[in-house]
Image 1 (cartoon, rainbow, N blue to C red):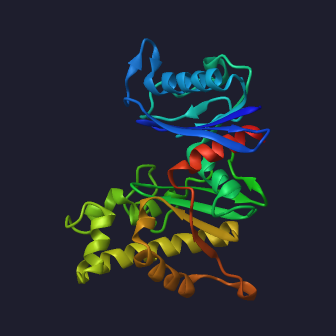
Image 2 (cartoon, helix red, strand yellow):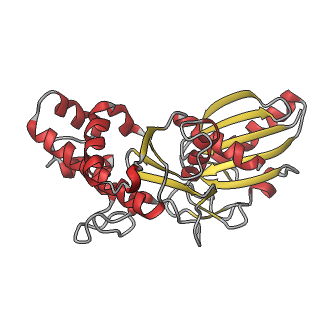
Image 3 (tube, rainbow, N blue to C red):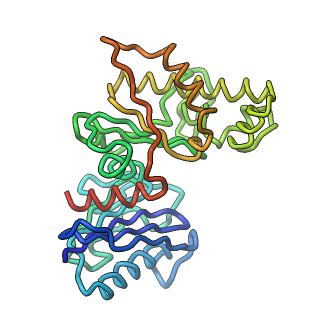
Length: 299
């Protein structure tokens, strides 16, 4: 048996998957809660939880890990041993060398969590086998990742894939990264209250009002979806993906999202030789990051 682990690290939860590489079988997956910001001795709660989980798995399966992939918020260092930049969250994550911390002989690779989610979807999910693909994760904010010609785009400092921070309006208000009129502010939950004049505080409630016939809610929602379509066609003209995956809480809107979005894409998309974007919903859900981290750790 050759053990491999995939870990998806969040501020309050850690998701983990363990595989037997020899048989190609998943042995277990688990979710652990950790206290955001809490420390045990000198180690953050999430670091101790990951260390304890991996040790417990090694003891139970009576094997040492050969590979460990860790998905985390932040920009991964070029050598993939740590997170190089993650201000304001997960105190202690920056420059933590995971291989040294875990005191393991396993190969350890660290990857940004959105990058990991796309890797997971291409390995086992809705993007399986695709070589040109974009992922947009839309919830409180908007994250993303891209694979072009079969290679994950990381960029010069690991910043590639922050697709929520493309600008749709150069005269708009700056978002959290300073980008004016960003895609994130046009569609993310973080600005629903502002976009709706204080009437709604979540996308879910906005969509429910739209479906119930509220004309003002409909106007706000369709304006948001039109912005999303403009963002998608801009990414299509830049990266030329075969598939665009949508993930995150917004996908719960179902046809209330997909029907108008496809209509706007029909209006906006440049389609040389009738080629058109294949728009899909991501299928791995909250496990995409752990799956992608596991796979990344083995390649």
